[in-house]
Image (cartoon, rainbow, N blue to C red; front, side, top):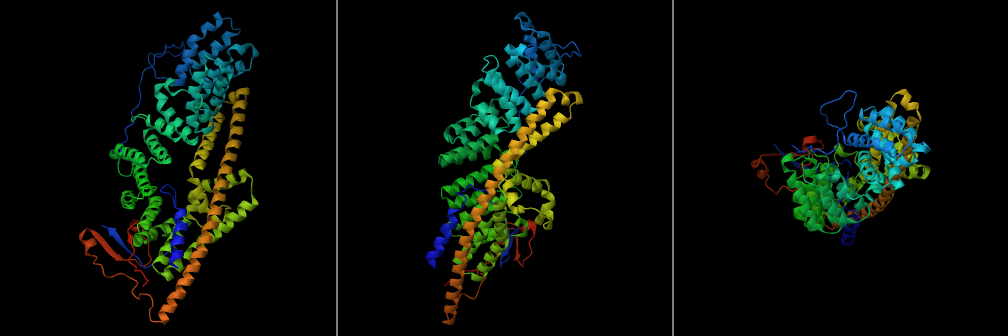
Length: 576
């Protein structure tokens, strides 16, 4: 039996988050007692003046005004437009008129003219310039996807005068869209040192992400490290720099980087997202270094009123388990399995609880725990098997996921309505938190915002060739993005289905060992060598807690939100 116990624990360990996993979920009761205790982010706005010639509009002139980077580029092109006539370009008056309208911020009319010129063979020589300016028009109208298409066309034309500027603008609009495909395309061709200083930190951060996707973790860490501390990208870059070092097994370097981030965010408050993420990162690195005590101490520093506390509470349970602190494991899991977290997907935590009960010969508690696992995840596993077998179209997965996303708050409160949905609520909730699906869904929402921007334009613009063109772009990109999101959702569902199949095998092994343990306990009882009769440890004095400002009382099955995380298991080991 001892041999199996060790095997069971190792089986569970094999699926633990080597310190870096997202978890969540469930609900059980036991003889437990609890101990209850009675930001100013500085963002430095850049106000750098750029040496550009000011082109004064004849209509509504202003003595001084702030203009966007895209408008500055428009003004630069307008200032150069007279040279077109001297170079012999036909119909240069039409281009000049478009630039005049653009400088007056009459983007709709200017874009209509430019779109027409971009398709006119007489302007073939100036097509790169026209498409570049048309991209600027779309950018000013918040139509970033349509703008990206113009900049990509210019880059593909290899025009020496506009390729570099188009790559720069493409990187900016791709960042606004959160489109990894466009970012990969632009970043693979651009030199960060030639980029405008105002956007260099954004580019270095995006280059770091690009290199991580290519598994070039050393280069990614270098790119993240170059982001300036005054940049709004600094906190994210520092966190990703540490993760890059973890990927190369530079755990000491990762620990230093996480610590630097936590220190940089110290003045922003203890619940600051970046500071908390850095502390969690240090705890996970300490876990990978097998420094259980340090890992546990760092996990304790994460405030309960933060989003990742639930995840880190489960992660810390593994650190307690590896250091053989079984009471601490059960104390944590008692909070995780409260009704407040029953909608979180975390099947592994229930099996871990059962294995601990097996280890300390608490077979009755183990039986309750395994029954809870089967009650919650048996129907979920069956439903996923049926769903995956019946559907392969990614659009089906996307539509079913979006139904839950759109009605999330209602479903969170009304459990009965969840039965009308084909994807289990706790499964969909877990997928919504996955980085790849979350990023793709954000891109889809950006496209929908752009579609709304198109619909807000005048009838003349919407029904003109340029409006029809813009709508076709959004329609095509939406279909593609939704298909991608659907495939991602399906992949996650298949992985969860397979994971649960493995966990149910472990569940069956654990159940067998429980029955065998009960049989051995009954034999000992017949021989007069039964399990210990005292199931609660009353030998320890509780005055320590009272003297230090804590209140202490037994748990009788009623959970209170402010008590979550403060339960202390006082059961004893039943083995002789």
